[in-house]
Image (cartoon, rainbow, N blue to C red; front, side, top):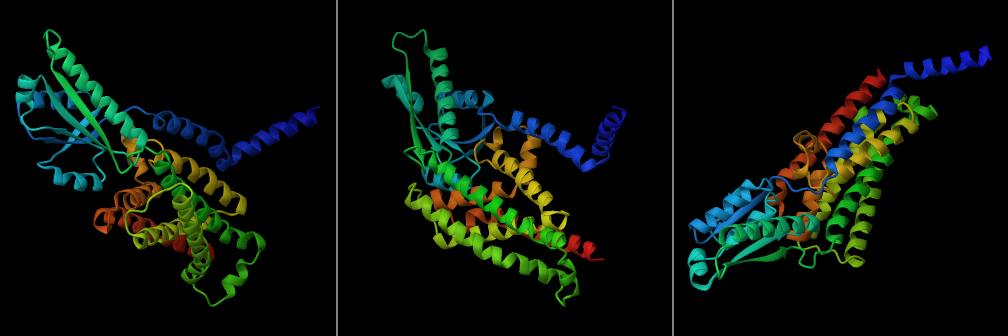
Length: 368
């Protein structure tokens, strides 16, 4: 019995001495519960809106003030005419445009009714529904508070219009997200085990003895997977268009080019994971658990990033899928060109260069 107890104590000591195991056992649940608790929320907070006020009277100013002071909306832009609306939405920062008709106050006095139009970016249908619902309720509250004592109360009629997804199909939100997640996980997992496999099989010595430089070895590892992943991307896009009716309003060539860039970035990340992993199992665990949950929760695929706490919003900037989802939605649903997505494109290029540089540096250290 003493031997058995001693064996158990030895196992405990063995586990506690392995800092990597301790991080996985205690660190990951801690991080995941925080991410789940703060990221999974459907509440609206400080959503950016634009205002087109064609009346500029006291009534419209009071309604705008009520919208902004509610805590749900933040006035990010004041536009002068309807021609600016497509430009505002394509920039990606605005999710809702509120339009007040001309002679708003005089129409209320004369006809006892006035119209307000709510234009929402329905590329994310769930968020669009929430934004228009919150705005309509605030306008209704304003109407009840201001005119409840009148015999003929004024009628404020919010007219809701959904842009880029008039039928409110949820597939328009899920297909870009699924494309991003599949490309990210497949590409990263495929390459994450490549160098780790060479170490386990003992064939790394052959590579070391070859005249190939570290950069050539890394590029040689990536190129076959670039071709395979690109074929997978084409298959996924084809299924999205033919089976689910996902439109491609913008340039197909630009969409495929951006997909290729994202694939190269994901493969570079996989190579970096491979260079820091001693075994294929460790590499697979990192690519599966360290990439899957953050990609799903912090990329804006399901839960709006602007609703998250500021630390998570800042951390989400380090998630490459966040930027690719913006790119793919803008091209497929809004028909945006490179002039609207150049920032996101440069960010993906930066991530790819960074991961290749880190892979090369780490690979050189391990060759020494």
